[in-house]
Image (cartoon, rainbow, N blue to C red; front, side):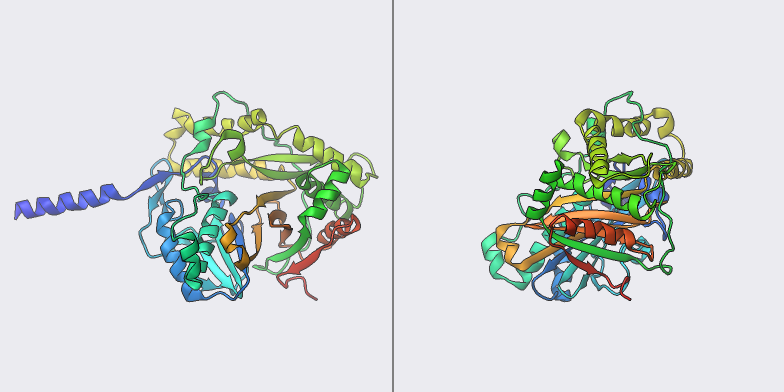
Amino acid sequence: MKNEKSKKEKSLSSTRRKIRWDKLDNTANIFPAIAGENMTNVYRISVTLTEKIDPGKLQEALDIVLPKFDGFNVRLRKGVFWLYFEENGKPAPKVMEETNFPCRFIQANHNRSYLFRVTYYNCRINLEVFHVLTDGMGGINFLRELAYQYLRLVHPKLKGETGDSLSQDTSLNREDSFVKNYKKSKPSGFNKEKAYLIKKEKLANGEFGLIHGLMPVSQLKEVSHRYGVSINEYLVGLFAWSTYVECLHKMPAKNPIRIAVPVNLRPYFDSVTTKNFFVMVSAEFRVEKEEYTFEEVLELIKNSLRGQINKEHLEDLFSYSVSNQMNVGLRIVPLPLKLFAMRLVYTRNALANTTTVTNIGNIQVEEAYRPYIKMFHAFIAMSKGQNLKGTICSYGDTLVFTFSSIFSDNSLQRTFFKKIAQDGVDIQIETNGVYYE
């Protein structure tokens, strides 16, 4: 009897040891501390196919793909000193038709403990991710493989052409590139001065407004070249100028318009991690006189960004945060106190920016799947003090700039797209219906 009990205990112990766990990366630590119904820290990336979605096949595709991605097949657990990921092991979350506004808070206990959701609508597959898991690059990785697997199930001939395994371009790397690349004793490079904050009447509680502007990349390149800037600088500068025109009414302001721009660190540090690996730089425009031309604003934004986006400065920005994480004295502070401190730090830093404009970049897909994939969209949820944000992504020759907002007024968005049209770019506008009259 004693031997049988001992064998059972050993068996249970062995099972427990096999459960995979993982640390949160440096940036991920902040998201659980601040997330809630009003600040969800959820982003969405969606792919639009050329045909209507079969929900059964989409669920089957998710069931197949999820076990291959350790970074998504996890749940969040609380330790004494830190939060950590633990292998989930439950069936994949249920694929649902989209019936609500996007980027809602993900209640893990209602989602089989997973920190992402997959929904569909008509021809579109939506992936919504709690930022604690990964940034936009990791999200693209997962969504692209989900779409590939779905298309192989719907069109079996694709399986013969491409095989049934993950693409060679899909990384499963879970390295903490922050810790690997940080340098000790770096000062904080973050600006803590309060920025100008956009304040307007809000939509009804729970509503979430989206306006997508679809534009040819080739035309945007021509316009940006004419101004002597990159496409990203042009669009960030235009957001700053639109804020100056529609919110400040071309009047001087005590606080600067400051736009947070996430920078993907992977190219600078030779990383392929699927954990978060980005930092924020801030494009700044101090409104010190009554009349600025668009060209003047664009020049200020360009110089602000180019002065910051270099390896040395980017290294300074994340090294300070990682140094705190690695500090032995801080590491033994109990988790509740850490979470409280992170909320305070976040609030101070969040109010230092007017808004955020994030560029997911150009999304590439394998040639065999291109005839079935029409479009990608991406956008982010609101955060403290930032109730209007922009997201950029492109596929083929189409770039999509998406405004996500909980403001009822959309005059800034109209000014933004009107200027692009005046500059000679053809624009197609789509919305989720919130701003229809």
